[in-house]
Length: 219
Image (cartoon, rainbow, N blue to C red; front, side, top):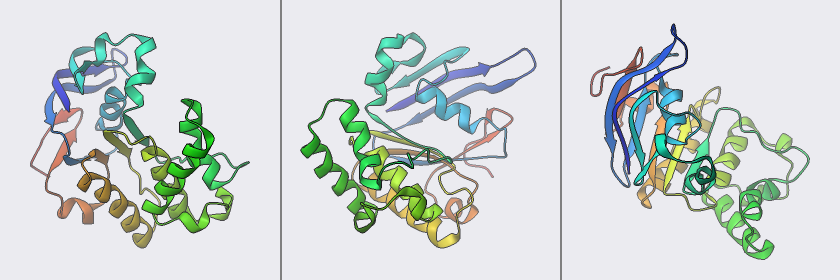
């Protein structure tokens, strides 16, 4: 599903985010990214989402070479991706339900069908009872779970989550990770960047980055 072949990403002559990274993530796999701040975790996720292009090497996502992907093809790539970031970027002038419906309305899905799928997504993250609430009335953990619902409402093949539980308490973080694990069990490929040691200790696969280089299997 995701393959990096000797990938490097250099922003300036003095700033290199990734150095010769090679890895494979299989369909339906749940993989955690770990490493100190500045290790290259966010850059790696941005390369998968075509938010950045590799300086050298090849990034392949579901058969698509990101380095050769034309700008017009990016929206089609991202329709198969669920993107979750630390900053939820929920629209505060509309309800939780309207926030989750938005990705489908943008792609032209009828409103009735969009609402049905949005309610199903909120139910999956345990927030259907807050559908009519405004985002600012929710806790930080609840807002992040709304972001997850919005990310999966288009039924993506891949979920990319960059520190999705940063600044959340333990109980809220557990609910976020439980939701992500549930999608992985349903066949969605998940790549999650996190500093959460409790989660990493029980993970089946962790990719460690240190100064932009891969150190898989070692803390």
